[in-house]
Length: 347
Image 1 (cartoon, one colour):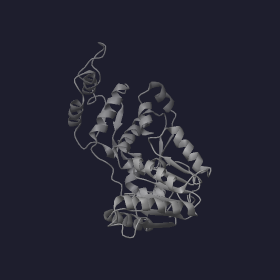
Image 2 (cartoon, rainbow, N blue to C red; image 1 turned 135 degrees about the horizontal axis):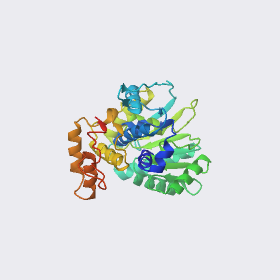
Image 3 (cartoon, one colour; image 1 turned 60 degrees about the horizontal axis):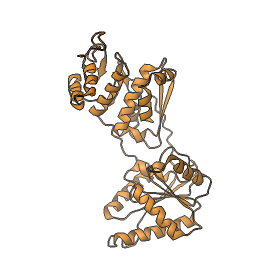
Image 4 (tube, rainbow, N blue to C red; image 1 turned 135 degrees about the vertical axis):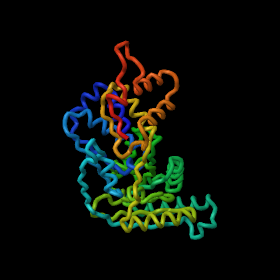
């Protein structure tokens, strides 16, 4: 994960192992590019590039990306000569989709919440009975637990219902994934924990309870059905409110037309800057050329150091700031090299 790479870069033994790395593959890159977790990874990749003994090739993979040029620039970053070159391989393939927006009741705008959800569970049971394997996505862990419980009560003992979300232990999640892949489950209720990067075998139908909130999320989830390229992905989106109906309809239309959300890469992430600089100094990389590419704080280095000083409390952490600003000595051996002097911090 991005976090474990960050941890490896602070370990002497791990960094020695990483020196032979030649390729970095960022799978499902769309899930990272639009948030600070992706910015954090981008800086870690720059630190890794400084460590390896040869050229480092970066490969990003995703089925739901836009705009491709911005994500490519995010992936490869830049060096002292400018943006690094990147080849974009656009497969241009679009899967056939069978997507419908549904309401639990014909008069769902006037119906009460309890009546809506009760009807939704009954409709889900009918869909599960009509298909070999069904995947049900919920937008929260609480709703996933509640939905799996209610479906189990309504469907009876002969219908096998499972649940999968991030609060469950890894062993239980793996067991649910294996059961689904082996055909031992009729339906699995899940959150985003089953959205990316997991092989779950053959799924006939995906039901999304409430709006998926974005085109990319909708495609990732409904694309779990008929996962092979030559199969149609069948999905049903069940809505419970007027605004949700409009949003889900727009998302499903965009999905059918092959349109994507534009990902916006965060800028000016001073918290990421402070964390990565602190880790760099703590690891002893006093003269490392740390490039923040297109993801850095749009501010002067002096301002960035002021921000870092405000983040540190006057305890042991203040020592780290003094190392960064070059005003402290280490074991009487002399002044620790200053980040504004022997090292470069590109903004």
